[in-house]
Length: 568
Image (cartoon, rainbow, N blue to C red; front, side):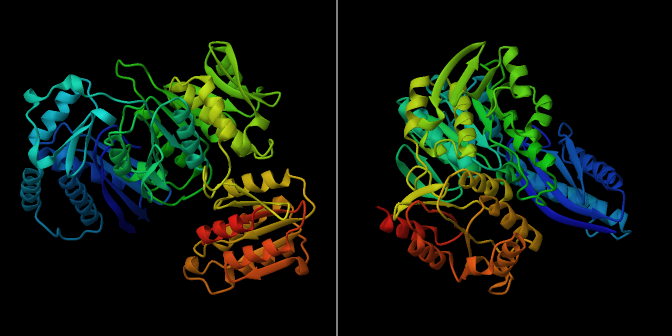
């Protein structure tokens, strides 16, 4: 029998299991019926909750392939204590199942928990939150600060020096237009498109992403800001007039949603990536995790928010009936069944007709832009960027943005290192076309391979690298997918910073072997000790009308600088 606690953490927002803050544990369980483990844990959890006077709190659980997720709701001012309580319930469960003597007497543990709760408790904070909800005023809270209002009206107080509710002028605090963006691929591109659309509409757009946090043209900081911390920083910034928040799977599962009052949310697509973490082992479970954004849509008596979904994604189509919210569907195909059914009911849809992007609501249609007028679609070859444009249109319309601003933004947004760094960036060298991307999963790799397969060229070069922590099968499948480009030459580049336990040359050899089995000749396959050296070789070989696809995992800045230097 295996009972291993994998992770114990706080939940600060709406999450996969509940709409409440609390504490959650992921545990690996084998050799015993998982339901038995959950049932025993629930007895101890309820017993402890009652003992610390949290009788109104709830318990939640989820059973997955090799373990369980167990959670409790808890007051927002006592989440660290809640983690201790949940872990105590787990510990007691393990001791009962393994017939082990208790490490700590339950009565002693309860007194310890009560003391921890008392030390952490902040009744003034809870009263402020209660009053904020009563006045329908947006608020943010973290370990250090409490704030009211977003953007220019935002005001912060230290947790240790909170204001008296009766001294607050509640009417001065306002919200701003807000949207979530999530999905497996296309999140950052969609966020950046939305930023340009909102700027064209005359608003200062703030964005959080896995790459940076930015307000207008000012990058506040580089790094992964797709979690609650990034959202709070952005929404408290005085210049933020509209906010687009990229929310990744990890942030949703680790902490829950950053806020729960957005006007719209976009799910770009669902594909296999990062499985095996936080009990999410299947694509269907991943879809449910990302769909948590639907819980963040405005609904409580205010104008309801809209969830924008990809009708070409079978996982989203299958999940949609469970999501009881307003929807806007988009598809590359006007005759898509899901889209047509929604359109017939007067629902919001966005699709391609005669190489034009069309938006329809209540049976009234508007043509937004032609595919060939959107630079990032490469004259229609980049199908994934047509989808990204459709999703952005649906999201922008859900925020009430006019067609003119949307058209202007899409007609100027380019796949270059300025507008969309690392995503299908285009360069012209020796009258040849070079595309640089850092696709790192099968779904995004296929998008780039199909794009470049659709582009006519004299000769095609493909440079590939893979991280060493992927399995042999994953590396082989990624390489096979990239080979759908039908390259004439392949360059396998070592990524020494990402060996992650592999020997030098091991990953490039897997790429070489896969290319040989695909029918490529040995004389057309080259290996290099880094992506930069591989790029230099490709650039030196380029002739008129050639095409090179460079899949770059490291040295991106140096490679980008080299390509700019060589561009004409």
